[in-house]
Image 1 (cartoon, one colour):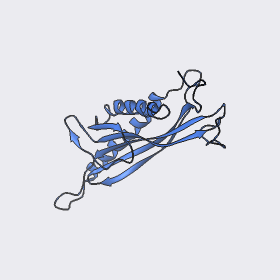
Image 2 (cartoon, rainbow, N blue to C red):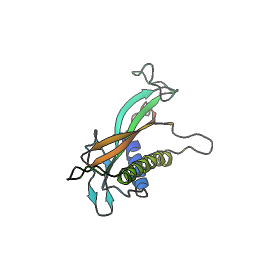
Image 3 (cartoon, rainbow, N blue to C red):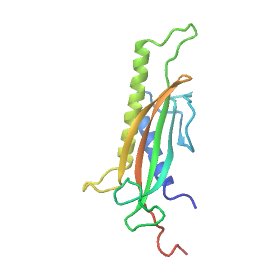
Image 4 (spheres, rainbow, N blue to C red):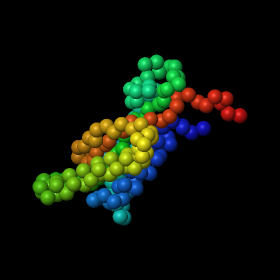
Length: 179
């Protein structure tokens, strides 16, 4: 049986992220997938796109009715408890580098790179909002959006990552266990 706590949330967020990146300044990415851990700096180019995007699970923990605070007694399944799943969304893009003659990128090139990365950050925020919307009455899945942090240039790639903590649901399996 596949994970039912984090996997559905990660897959849904990945689909939203990949769709949002299609309409960014830099356009679609070449690779958009679930990642098992930190992604290598890779900003491949492909027909119609550039870069790499990912969603990965960084933490899963029992939480209390005061989401996203960790449960005081995580070994005991409280009736008002659930799991919190922390997800990282990330994007790498190609950025200008020092050329073969040792000339650094121009201000225009650096500005264009900054615009790409900040537009990707906006796409990440939209992906979270679209994937986990609030209902008209303010109810819905509890979501806490964390910091977006830039990822410094490495090997002609740079990017950013955004953390989001999402309520998964009840921490106890249904009574009866199936059959």
